[in-house]
Image (cartoon, rainbow over all chains, first blue to last red; front, side):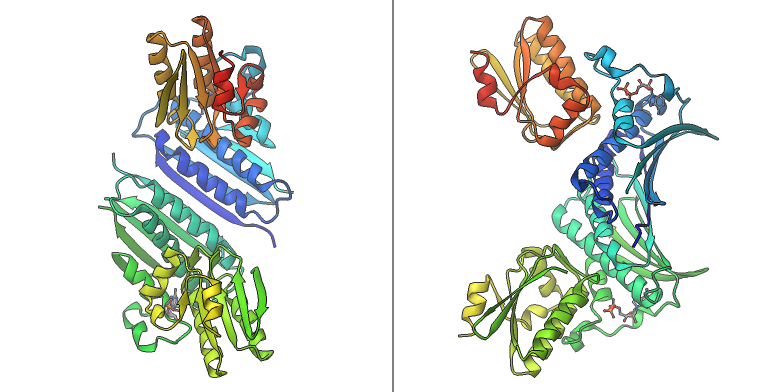
Length: 140
Length: 140
Length: 112
Length: 112
Ligand SMILES: Nc1ncnc2c1ncn2[C@@H]1O[C@H](COP(=O)(O)OP(=O)(O)O)[C@@H](O)[C@H]1O
Ligand SMILES: Nc1ncnc2c1ncn2[C@@H]1O[C@H](COP(=O)(O)OP(=O)(O)O)[C@@H](O)[C@H]1O
């Protein structure tokens, strides 16, 4: 039996919903029948990459403006878990970030590194009115 | 600060996703800043009415056909929590169900009674290709 | 559905080892009980101590077991209800139907 | 953010009483520590035993405290890391930066 599921979330551009969305991500990860690895670890990682990606969208793209909106889409397709975080910002070049080892006492700059370390595919793409960060995890 | 939130879920017409969706409902209920009552009780009730409404849609409307789809929408508007469960069935007259007290040793027939007891407004409406059960809980 | 089944004298103790007893797994509980009835075992205690959530079809499976046990001159009793689960029996008035005990010792003792 | 602050000799013990230390509340922890530094308190132990989840900005607030404490000839040490939280320090190599103790007693003793 393959997993099939689609969850779409819209919240104001505010960090107070991070915990809820992270928890929803954990719940989804714990439900995946197909995943052979450590399910609790997967749950933590999904919570984490959601938190990192949404915080970046709130701060760097949507300028902490509480009236803007964050849109998250989580779905399973072809035995892969897809997570998309949409922002309404100017975008950035995800391929040209400094590696965090070089500046290990910085307060910032670990979010994208964490996302890349934990997910199998990460892309950041331009859309008509903003950008989308897509993070994919294989479930087999 | 008012709560604002919109969660849309699509799953196959199968009971194995009941637990996940119930849990997402609980997570949302626990996050509501506005609600003055017992938040753990609210969480249980939201889990329960989601479970009852989705089971009915799966069995009575979508004939247990695993290839059909269930669509659930949970959102907050005007300090009310709205839960909508869409089905693709023929519908039924929600105002003409027998009261469960009269047949208290029946195995069935308590779902809609439970939903009505726990929610503030319950309506069942015809749509273009199916029906929607809407359940509303005031948060103040 | 995971259940743990134990026999003590002429009573069968069924412990439901699931967090939820709902439309997804209540049919299995019902079938487990039907098997016991066919083996002539008509005195049952269902221990719900691990169950945190029960829906109307979970209640329905217990009503089914209750009716079958009674029809065979046996009985089905419950124990270990968590507060939220107990409130479901009250909401549906089923607490007037079932004999409900705090734990399995007391439920088993009631058969002596 | 709920923190519990206790002073033992010349060390301040900060226990973070939150399940998550993330972009929503890490700024407050950072400010709490800045207040302590302004009061001349430069030896800190942060107890994370209640924290189940930490993100990069939670780590960032601890790095900020670490740098400020060091610059004032004090130090910031950690204790009570749950396994998943610990794995975050390893992933970001920050376990090489911080002195990490199993519990607050051992962390406090290291200042003696
Ligand atoms: N959604 C985004 N929109 C615009 N810029 C972004 C976005 N996400 C990340 N960035 C840029 O990439 C940098 C690195 O991000 P990250 O690794 O998460 O570290 P941090 O957020 O702590 O700076 C950010 O400082 C920002 O300049
Ligand atoms: N979504 C639906 N579509 C069609 N009929 C429904 C739907 N929901 C409920 N019903 C009808 O209402 C009856 C009562 O539902 P309920 O109170 O939930 O009890 P049960 O599902 O145990 O029969 C059902 O038996 C069914 O005939």
